[in-house]
Length: 275
Ligand SMILES: O=C(O)CCC(=O)C(=O)O
Image (cartoon, rainbow, N blue to C red):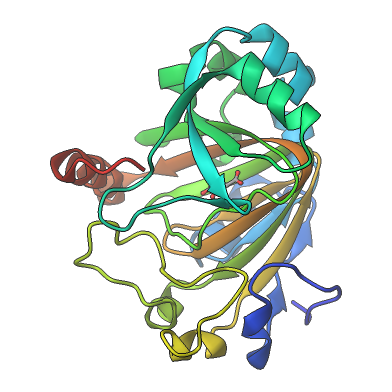
């Protein structure tokens, strides 16, 4: 790891602390991946893995827009590029056809929505084209999302309870990653209705409300077309889309840990959370 090489757009306020670059490597054999990254829960950028593993050569925003022209899916409304989210109720999704959504991205420099949907529930035809990466081939629990987004689309700082392989198929994504032990700096609220979302804004820090966040120390990653980020469970992350981007998230959990995302799913249903 080295210190940051470029001006990063996300979490600029964290410059009071040090930021580190996630290592970038050629995808190693499974045993090495498990020993160096999975067991130690360390993020790593696996250069070019998406190109090898996924049969997604035809996945462009325009191509998916044409293929699923009339398919209605839930979209996340954006507020100045940031995914809109209410702490007590979750996301106020709006349903639109994929074709119309992609047309809107192509015709406007300011995207109004972000498409990030569960593959099995909304675009199940895509599941067979993705395949299963060998790093999680025998996992007991799996879930996946596909996303299409345009310039400046940004997720809030959030966390997941399963490991993720985030593949950028087209375009580019910048990430700020915070290790689990910095949860307190991100004002983790375990008893809130949406404990997996930090109230700290990824662009502008309200130092009055969140003074501890200024000392948070992110790891940084820039994912280019074909790259895959291994994001261990429990790492907080904000994601910024640079230009028109198609991406795929592949979550998995094993053993007792596979009960955790299942329990989280039940909790969300119980609280009627839309995430
Ligand atoms: O695709 C994105 O922009 C967000 C991905 C993400 O946050 C995730 O996979 O957890």
